[in-house]
Image (tube, rainbow, N blue to C red; front, side):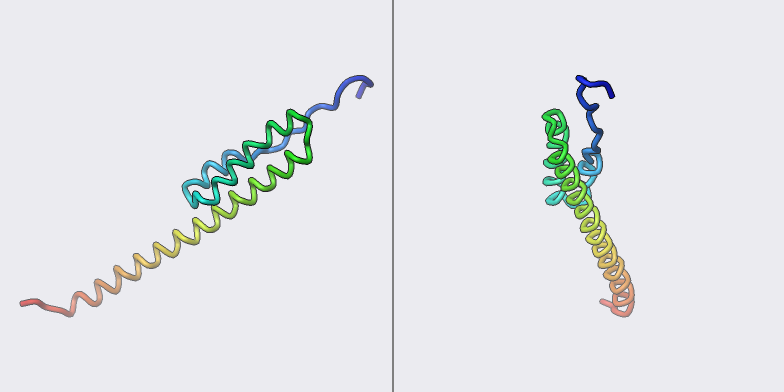
Length: 98
């Protein structure tokens, strides 16, 4: 690098796409993910690489939590629906209203 030239800007993934997709899994945790993802680029422009890295890490953490909690919730709901449907089919076939 030549003297007098600034360092080239670092590229930090702001995790905006996973943060937006996380809305469909568990929106209460996707909101802090989006807020932190939106802080990354302005911090990079200001030269605060440590702050941008911290915001990107927080965004990744919140979106990952939203994905995990949303997936677990979806599995629980599907199991309850499946179990309820099976129990309704088994229990309903023995009764007669004639």
